[in-house]
Image 1 (cartoon, rainbow, N blue to C red):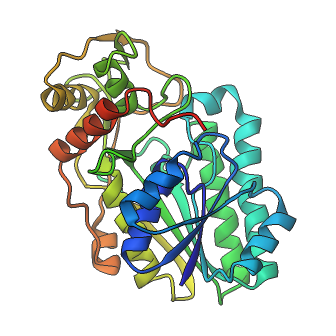
Image 2 (image 1 turned 45 degrees about the horizontal axis):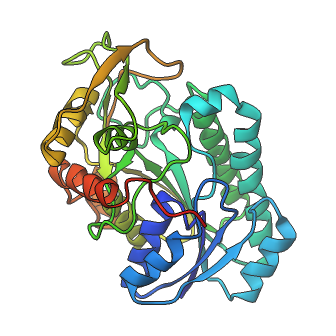
Length: 338
């Protein structure tokens, strides 16, 4: 079975391609390389032991997407392509709406023309906004506190309406919590362009000497140590969640919604201390003001995914930080330039 993976050279996409190959699928990657590097491809091949088809294209180009979907005999689509930084979205909302919303709608239109009716969409826990309580279940009210989250929420609403109008489609919305870690080989990992927007790659870059200190945005939240609490999930567990969705609900018509998280909340300071243990170094950090759009705490109730998808996160915090350090210490500057 051939699976089109949009954004397949990105952080989560590349790890999912490895797991797709291991599970017997044939991934076909489409990426415009706006925030990833083509040097990821030989590393996927090295780990998986297989050649992988790559097409440089933009999901907003409908004609190109129709040609790819039809020309490669695609059976289903996993849609990762999009912009993903909360802070950046506050500064550049229009770009986020164009890339994330317009891109997805164009892809769906191309799929409809190509008669491909199975989609797994890379959503986010940000669609829960500032939740009234934790842990978060899939039936919690949705809202958005920043343009990134709003773009994901609007896409979810569009896909929900589309599936209602096209009941023979299978559309799965996977709401990720906070992906961290890397492939245990150290060959694949998170390599943000410019200044990292997420905590773990910033911590890793401080540990490897690329940055001076970690800025912790807010130490006055109503949490155990005043810093924000999140549900951090190993990227390999997240990748496995896509395989489980493809196998268990992908063949079933309907709208399927799942949290992918561990069910555990860790604070920013928890993560820094765990990374210090992994790398054997002190991580300098300073406190700064809260960022616009951030919330105090957010973690998942993953029981629905466990019941329906037979999936649960298996890797613990020690593995997350050890794998992240293995990636960063062996690739201090990230992936080589193209």
